[in-house]
Image 1 (cartoon, rainbow, N blue to C red):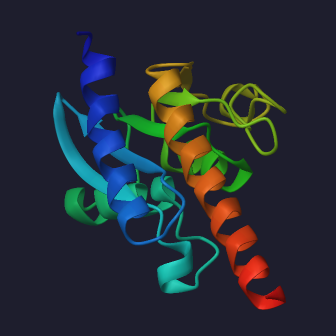
Image 2: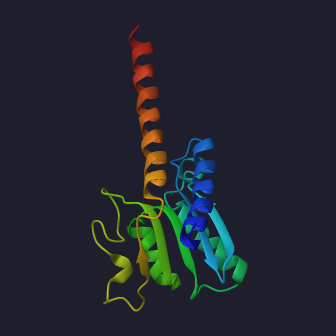
Length: 161
C-alpha cells in the first residue's frame, strides 16, 4: 500500500461518517510531516452552511490546530475532486499537494472542468494527484445517490397509493 492510498483510506473513513448522518459521503484529511493534523467530512445539510465541505472544514481545522493560515508542506487527501470553492481555499492556504479519489464531472476544478490548483496566474500552485482509490471513492458516491433516488421514488409511490 502506498502512502497516498493509506491517507485516502483515512479520508474514506471520514466520508463514511458523513454518509452515516445522511450527508453526501465526502471526506478529507490534511497531512503534514506524515501526521494527520485535520480530519473532516461533509456537513452541509447538518449545519445548513454551503461552505461546510469536507476540504473547507479540514483546512479550517488545520489552520486552528497549527496556529497559521499558511499550510505550506501540507497534503490534502479528499475522496472527491475539489470544487471551485475548495480549490480556491487550497490555493489561498498554500497547501502544497492535493490527492483526490473520484473525479467530479459536474464541478471538479482540479483537472476535470478546469484546474484552479495549477493556474499559473495565481501566486500559488498545488501538485495534483488524481484517481487514488478512485473506484472505492466513486462507488461510495454512486451507491449514496442511487439509494437517495430509490428512497425518493418509494416516497412518491407511497403518496400516490
